[in-house]
Length: 84
Image 1 (cartoon, rainbow, N blue to C red):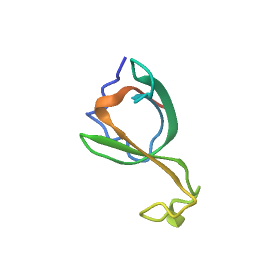
Image 2: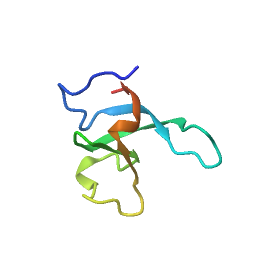
Image 3: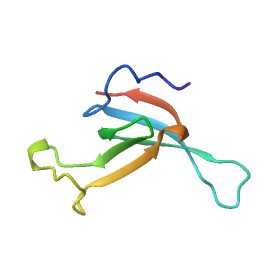
Image 4: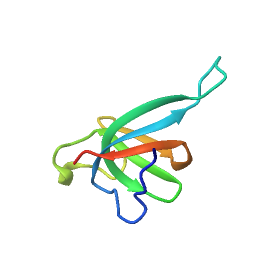
């Protein structure tokens, strides 16, 4: 079940996002989950860092090779759980 988070910002929240991903040699997409902190959001996408600097002041605007960043299209999102 997709939770409606449109009324409040998810920015800086730690989340678990279940989403459908494409699958090679399959008839259906596969559900995956990513855990991390929401960096940015828009009506079309969520940007989540699953490995990031603990100190936000040290974080660059763009990934620097040490940050693991994921961009999910909202149309593929099945569920969002706020963890923190």
